[in-house]
Length: 255
Image (cartoon, rainbow, N blue to C red; front, side, top):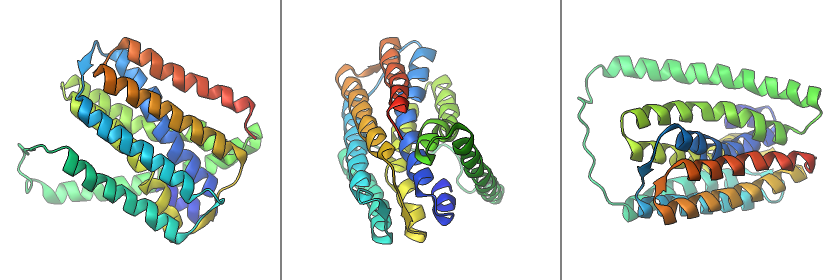
């Protein structure tokens, strides 16, 4: 919704800044908070490496899709397709059997209504957030990309934090890691592309280049450590939070 609304208003920097910022925030701040919140849990190294490597690839692809400062409809379509290819490739690499203990037909109408109302609420909230970003950039005299990357991304990452905490409490550790990494991959591809697919937009400013490269660097470090150690603990949480806090040093060099 952020991508579509910001693109329709001609503010591509908000779309890209929020999407890349959300991927970065989820894999550093959210994951770091979770690591400090719980004692410790193991992760499946193969799955973390596969999803992490694919997320890095999607970040690179999205960078090249907007490298010339303009996201065209073909580039938007390319980013959306790349996400679907990401899902198909992971399905081939990670072969698992899943079971659904719930009756899929139970309360289906109620669930459908709740989904529709949820999307309406998200649309209204997103519209208000985007206009708030306009005011923030005016008051603080910073670019829309920076405001979206550092401020808006925190708000769009809060739902992931809520889902992950709930999953951790229920001992669903794979669900927690999958939600964080999967949503980051979606932010780096589908989220950026869906808006420009409908409304091609410009993306400008040196801030995009600096934060993009730092995001790729931070995600690489997180995925590498998690793949090698195979566990989420307090040491890993400190590293994640350090990567996140260090990013604020970029504020002094961004336009």
